[in-house]
Length: 70
Image (cartoon, rainbow, N blue to C red; front, side, top):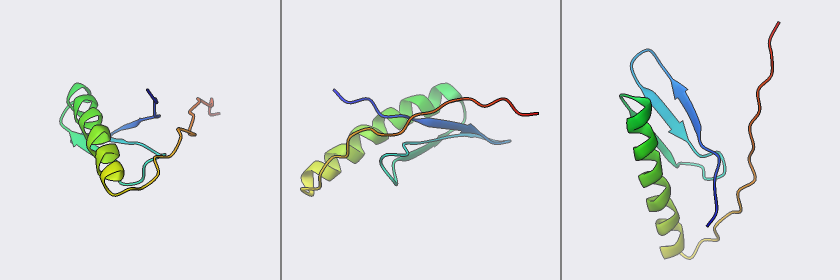
């Protein structure tokens, strides 16, 4: 089973999530817990649609890190 990096972002009114290795695989929710569930569902549907279309499934290649500012 492949594991893809998910980036979570908070705005003033919601949470967002996207998968950098799968453009268009996104989700938005009211809470972090909600968006975590939604992006999991979105990832499964995104990969299924790619398989159904005969598209190659990209290998996970993104990574994340933290950098201290100032």
